[in-house]
Image (cartoon, rainbow, N blue to C red; front, side, top):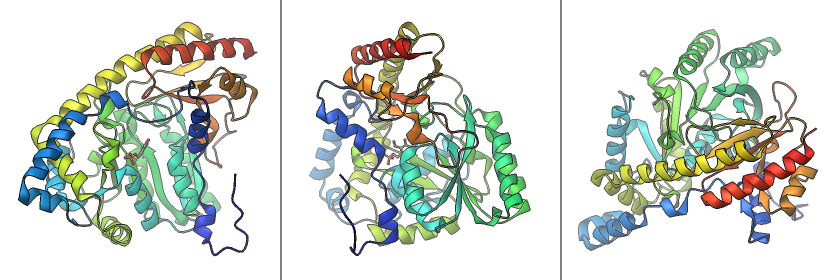
Length: 421
Ligand SMILES: Cc1ncc(COP(=O)(O)O)c(C=O)c1O
């Protein structure tokens, strides 16, 4: 229920802030304990590295000097040791210029996205996003008062020609100077589960370079949240690897998906001019992310347990992804369009002729059958490049067991077969 806010001293920004649609979905799931939730994007609890973390905590706390440091305040930009280890890892992964001073450790990747937006976007400024995109970030942009414009995607991710068209439209309408950010996910996107091919990464960077020469400055945001969850297929280098000058691209990563989201640690690496402002804004918020979490993470990286945890997650998700996708193929009519993910946590499907919106007949029938999904509607921004599709949905295989994934897909198949024109 919406609380009345009339006459209350609330900021315009607070009034623009949405309750995430996923909270509504999760509260629905809680009302029904037997609900098979294919909606929540949580990580697989059984894969969390609780054993190594318990040992690391015990070791840390038993060591006077290190425990005193870990339990105290740290620095706003993050633990020097963790940034050093991360920079070293990123250099091995192709970001040859990665240096600790170009990194900020944040409270999850989410805080990097928020602070970056806070540092660059004023109300009325324009942000281009993939359509569909990560809906939690859509809410960040809405609260910032941004004008969010969608760029079409296909089964390979952002379509470079669609980006060119959007940029041209901004020139034509005289609004190009309001463009601040182009936000895209480069690995196993949320919600579509697609991995941007190397050729497209290069093409997008070419378009961006040409565009920067033509007009005012803006930043590309590469959200690499699911990079570590590659289940098969090519290991594409970061989009950021095309920016060794560290001028145009800020890359955001996280320790949530391949280690432990409860530590609430993420990071970003980008041009010094924006990092400096982000660090000031982060300083206003929290003086730095949890020093204790950072000490745990650094220790895990030094001893290699972070690598083992990532491998464990990948093997669990491979089986779960197979369970879900095989059941979709087995129980769904062939007209259903399924994008089979090669990594990440999500499968995306379009059901021609079926309205999947919240409270639609399809949604309600599945709700009665105790199956929950994320309606595609939540993931599209207001200014889509064509008509906003109403027939899509996101299914996540992170949390449910293989048996429940199969059963959820089977129940869905019954309703789809019954409703498909
Ligand atoms: C695409 C994407 N980016 C960023 C995040 C932020 O995650 P965290 O704050 O846990 O690092 C998420 C979380 O689900 C995500 O899906």
